[in-house]
Length: 255
Image (cartoon, rainbow, N blue to C red; front, side):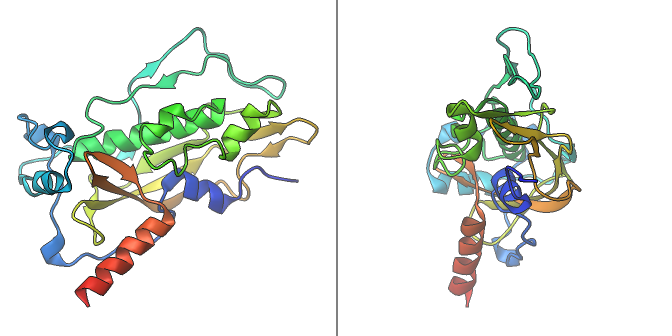
């Protein structure tokens, strides 16, 4: 039976960094993100400056006070609703799928900012697979690595030949640690250990073909590092190539 996405392709698209092991940073390079709950003045806000130097300063301003734990299932709180939501079936695509709304602190150089970025990214990724609309994801993907008209999820809808069904959220993410970890590869390069969970019921309908599972192979969850960088006043997800390149550059520079 044909499948729409290989397991590797789905993982790479959903996480950016795939299932690479955590990178080891030199102790002198470790500068934890500020916890926004202990920074009411908002000095770490991206709106203060779009420069990398400002974001690095925000990272260095972290306090040692008690911090909120973000461990658990990643959830986006706000969606735009346009009519009654009608789930997709094998006969008809979903109607009036709620659209993700950009969280208020998504572009802050804080732990909360990275969490909100990740929650919006995953919600928008799922929205793209349920609608073919990649515009929301573009707001968290400035380089259009995933949000573009060439994505498989976009093509099946734009061609009018298919849709995803038997699921509302093809991919769910659980964070396994309270906060992200600063790693080598840049002044604001972070990994957050988590778990990818694929909906085992998710299927793809393509005109003229038999129904197929959305993800190839076992849907058993896998631990992975969600790799992100804060640059020019915003977070962005790193691809496998980005993560490997930043690690190599850092290793070469320190050799």
